[in-house]
Every structure is written in C-alpha cells, then in structure tokens.
Image (cartoon, rainbow, N blue to C red; front, side, top):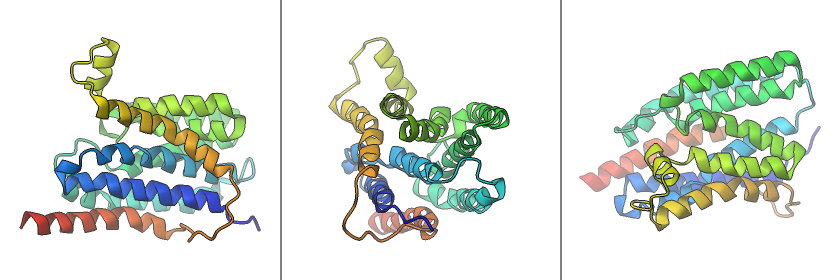
Length: 243
C-alpha cells in the first residue's frame, strides 16, 4: 500500500487556511488586503489534485476515479447555496465546478492515449463554453493539468503553471489596463496579488518535494465538507456582525 504523502496534506492545509483568510474579506470589508494571501488557495488546490493523480499508476481503470468524480460533483451542488449566501453578488459558480472540470482534464491526460487527449480537448472546450460562469474561468480549469505536467516534466511546466495562475487571477479590467500599459488603477495590492498567485505553484511544487518529518493530520474525504461548512460558518458570523 502506498504511504500517505505528508507534504501533500501540508499543501492542502495551507490551501484551506489561505482560503479561509481570503473569505474573511466578506465579513470584514476593511480586510480586503487578505485577498493577497487568498491567492495561494486555488493554485495549491490544483496542485494537490495534480499530485493525487501523479501518484496513480498510468492507465488506472476508469472505475477507480468514479467515487472521486461523484464526491466532487455532489459537493459542487451542495456548496452552491452556502456560496450564494456568503456572496449574494457573485457572478460565477463556486470553485468546485472549476476543479471538477480540471480533474476531468487531468484524468483524461493521465491515460496517455489518443482517446485521452480527445477527451481532454472536449472537456477544455466545455470549460471555454462555461467560462463566464466558472470561477477563474477556463484558464482555471486548465491549471490542474499544467500543474500535473510540472510535477512530471519539471521546471518549464512549473513556470507555465505560474503564468497561468497569475492570468486566471486577473480580472478583465486589470488585464486590459496591463495590455495598454496603463497604471491608472493598477496599485501595489494588485501587483502583490499577481505575485502571490504566480509563486503559489512554484512554492507548492517545492514543498511537495520535501520529506516531512513531523506528523500532519491527514486531509481525507472530510475535506469535501470543509468548503461548504466554512462558507456557512462565515455567513452566520457575518449575520451576527450585521445585527
């Protein structure tokens, strides 16, 4: 039986902690700088997903992945209501549909066959079609696959993951300003946000390569509940502060 990777659990814990810190902004608007710390969360979740797939033997039977896909699909639905309660003005779905598409693309490529490549292209096209409704857009759905390539092939793809992570964290207005080389509204916080998003895949990849000597509480299937439960908890805390 393959030994559990402590470094992978550590990456998940850091991702969850940064996510919670990020979401505190929705309770305390004055803490909007927390978004910089929060930019670590999504790339690290993508990297943890890629690491899970990397540990599987090539051409693992399809049915092996079925429980994983079902859990992610179910919690994508469960999490939407808590997400809407905390963020009633949100114009995208919660993060799990993006991760679900990312998982499907990764699993397709894991088979290293023509059918797998065609399947990955198909899911990528679906991500492009759903781009307006996906958190981090179609680029976000591609990030797990690029992280997987980084774990397999090394530095060049890690750098590509860094670029992709920064791009999918950029709002369209900010991107437009950068392309026009305008700094009218591009302040220090925006710059730190992009730096944080860009370095997350590299730091996470480096962390996965370390041998962790101390014990880390494993993030298993209970981690799926963490997302909707923490959203609901923050929503109720927000209600208390409003009252």
